[in-house]
Image 1 (spheres, rainbow, N blue to C red):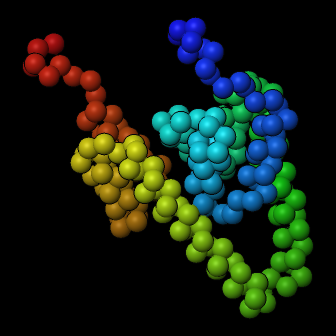
Image 2: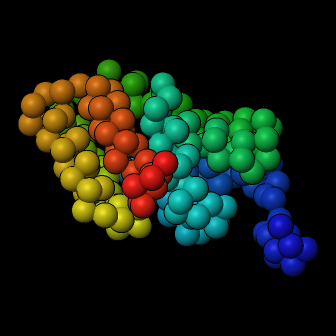
Length: 191
């Protein structure tokens, strides 16, 4: 890496900054749409990652057990500041949800069958689906380069939604086929 490129790299954020950014994201994100919200916060606002790095970390986070947002926070925090960054990011991301879930559990126990409670939950679910769709379109436009990429996506979605294939099995098969399809090979025909 050239000296100029090293000097133009943004400074590493402090542990406090990492905690604060993930605390705000954890407190203001809703439901399954958190991936789009994470992308906006980490790629667009903070510029801690580019889209390629975001998709790579998202892919890793989705293969690990646990919540994608928490996994992403840990991976990004680790990338930015090592183990302490991972801990700061995880705490920031998890504290708001833990506090809100405790309060929500109490409120739901007190009146969860009320029609207004049910309407609120349906509204949140619809918003989350919309956010997931937006992220899928934004990231797909940047990551999917060939017609084959779109075919793999559609085939995987059809296998899960149309044929009831379990997600891990569909991902393993689609991933193996995509790796085989995109493998480096000699275009001249000789090895």
